[in-house]
Image 1 (cartoon, rainbow, N blue to C red):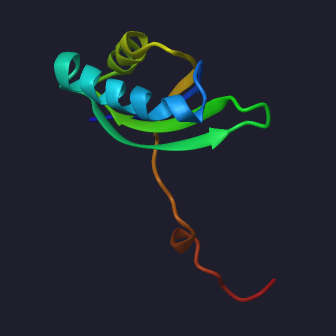
Image 2: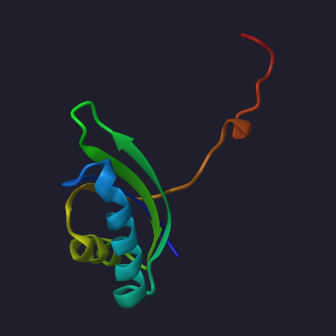
Image 3: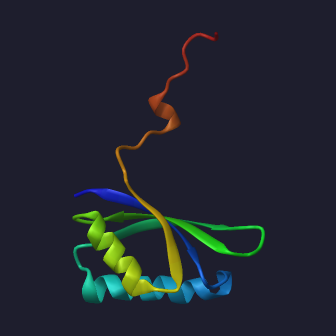
Length: 97
């Protein structure tokens, strides 16, 4: 099943994020059982706005978008299908240049 990165910013500050996280999980369990939320990276911009970079597994981008719409309290900045993963170990250091 495809994985997606969803980039968004929220209408709540960091104090409101636990409620948003719980709501996201509840929305998935109640309405989108075909969607799996793997994890999220949370960043706080200088002005205090919360931005997240979340990894979801879903049958298609429409399922990710439908979950986002049902969640509310945020704006989606982009949804991207993950083409692959790499780590530093995938690029061994050879002889110095």
